[in-house]
Length: 160
Image (cartoon, rainbow, N blue to C red; front, side, top):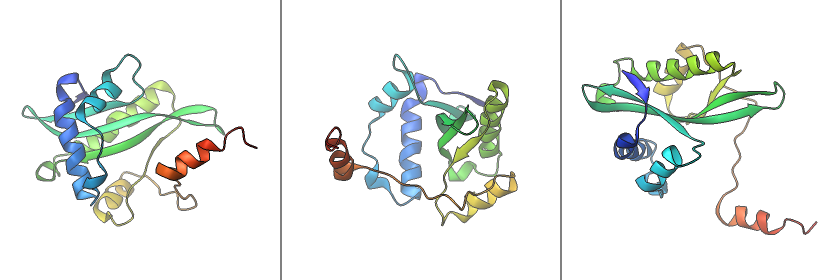
């Protein structure tokens, strides 16, 4: 069963986030807390949302997403930040169902697309996404400003 996350799901989602980070060899980069996650998902003006896959009363997986915007199409879309299904529950269709829920949301709301990133070494995920008809955007490179570089660029505002 796929459903919107509730506040009671936050500890389980947070653990799945940690499990995903461990799988992606990036667990030390998880610095947020489940309290921060709860505030982001269920605070007074949430800008991030989650669906969960429920398997016999336990969280099988989750999809965490937010709205993005295409200036060329002048339409919103959905950006899927994370999709994760517990390894022991893969093959039950939960990943496909979570993506189908997001695709249906896009169609129902008239959003033009569903976007996400995948690590280039994650061949099982890449194969899964391609089997769904998703295409890689090989012409685009993801950039990020963070930490000291972010602060340095911010400090330069107004300075010309």
